[in-house]
Image 1 (cartoon, rainbow, N blue to C red):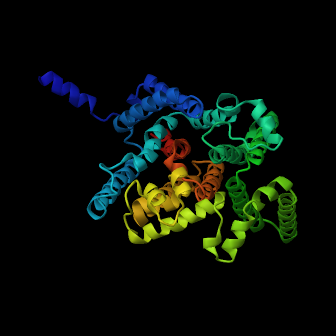
Image 2 (image 1 turned 90 degrees about the vertical axis):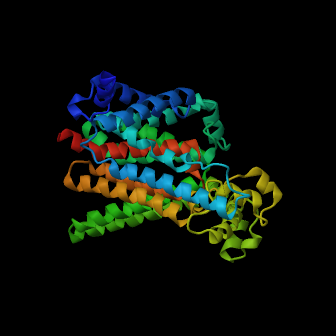
Image 3 (image 1 turned 135 degrees about the horizontal axis):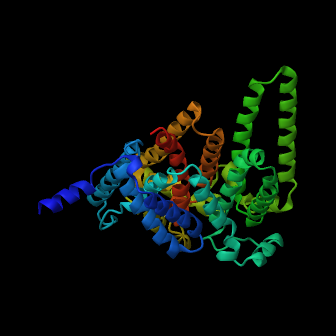
Amino acid sequence: MTSVSTSLASAFKRRTLAEQPTWLIILGIISITLYAFTRTGFPEIASAASAIATLTGFWALFKYGKLVNSHILFRFVWIAILFQLISWGLSQYVTPEWAEDHPTLDKITRWFVFIPLAWWVAQRQNAIWLVWGSAALGILVSPWVTGDGLDEIIRGINGSRIDFGIRNAQHTALYFGSVLIGLCCFAKPLYQQYKLSIIPIIFLISYCLLVIYTNESRQAWLALIITLVIISTYLVIKQLKKSSKKQQFFVVSISIIGLIALSSLLLNNEKIVNRVMVEKEAITAVTSLNFDEVPYSSFGIRLHSWMAASDYIKEKPIFGWGSNGNALVMSHSESLPDRIKADFGHLHNSYLELLVNYGIVGLIFYFSIWVVIGKMLFKEIKSGTVEKEIGYLFVAILCFWGVMNCFESYQNFWTGVFYFNVFMAGIIAKIWRPKLIRK
């Protein structure tokens, strides 16, 4: 009995990083890489790989991870569990007829699978590129895995809307838009290191642009434009600060010419104009503040559901209605037609869903994740331990993802959860890596 107790005590005794077995590191990196590549096309394989990477990651982080400050991230998990329980408990007390029988705690906590995954990515210098590259590759080959291959791409060029079988067009646009952003952020350092890399980079950027264009997802077009403007403005201001007056004039002139060229390209493109003008009636009604006159078009359905949600948010603003709040709005709101209630079960807006489900507490919690991780990342960038391109990527993805979530509830679907966890795993790994090197 004593030997068993001693063995158990030894198993749960924390060890140094140097004592972590190499085979365990290899297993962790292989499993998360496999998960990143297969999730879009081979979910059964991805599920097994994710389970291995997550379970071994939790164990290794506890056993060998004293050097990294993971406590602040795990506090997020405990807070998420707490406010989900409070929200469910209040719904049982105030509106028991609409409350769920039991709390659904994984609705938020599944966002934090990136914590154990990040441990494996941090173990090797280039593991982040292996994981992110595998996720990007899984997306890039999706036409031939989940879609109809070249035939679907050709249909898209000929005017059909395409999605490659990744849930729907909005989710496909999210993925290809993010790969495009990543390629743009790392094109310069890749070219500086490998001159010939410019050929595949240009090809892949063109491929992503073609998919996003033919995909016809308006929120992706808007999100990319906003992201481009924000990042470009920052880079222009940064360049102006270190330039002479003559150079400043040149930089400002080029920026204005670029803005005019982009605007002209967008306004004179028939496909883009026609796609936007589909919502002309809805846009006219909104600008004239006649919200009741907005037709039930793609945007109109979203707007009417958002207006319906506002009544529920006002009724329970702090902790919301529980994890099924968004479904309650769509099924019980008297302002929505029966056909809309039958066909739609969510609000097409991550922020409003958080407000309905978990109130102001839930929304603040979500934004605090980005703020805390962002502060940690930029602290490392300022100290010179993380490349500035990672910072550009973080801000660009924050802008793109932020706008996209205004029109779709990505984090309530596997697509958004996968996206968030793989991206954040890489960011946290970059933050932790310098601490492991300095061991």
